[in-house]
Amino acid sequence: MRLSLSLLFAVLSIPAFAATKTPPAASVTPKELGRFNHWIAATYPQNGHTVCYAFTRAGSDDPATGNGPILTVTDRPDGRDQVAISGGPSYPKDFTLPVQVGTTALDFYTSGHDAFARDNKAAIAAMLPASSAVAKVPGPKGGQSSLTFSLDGFTAAHDAMDKACPAH
Image 1 (tube, one colour):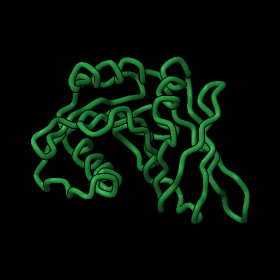
Image 2 (image 1 turned 90 degrees about the vertical axis):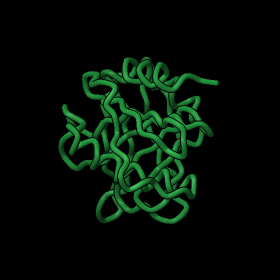
Image 3 (image 1 turned 180 degrees about the horizontal axis):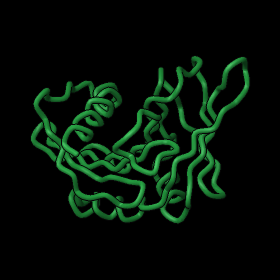
């Protein structure tokens, strides 16, 4: 598990670096909080603080395997419940990614291969009771494709994050 969490940390560091402008430490090893059905929760230290996150992969029963896009929720000292999709296709400039979570339609803004919830509170509120999140990504030749993320285990993973990184 250490290897897969280390690889995930490398993937997650890219959006974190872009958002915070603080490069991640090269020797940081994430600490797993637990596996919760299709979700894994973990922590890592950054600038003297603990960062908590939980993630799942699109269409995967085991988030630690495969190389599909990743849906992540992150708690940092400067922002809680930051929701992002990393490793998706290259999005066109100024593209808004529609994401359906249960009965709630959400918009994510995009940058390169990553997408970020415009309203993190609404995203978390929709994710907690829902069974899946479906992102409509640009497909080949102008069509659309779907990325489906299971939310089975998300509530327990989110609870583990809240326990390890309580709100101040």
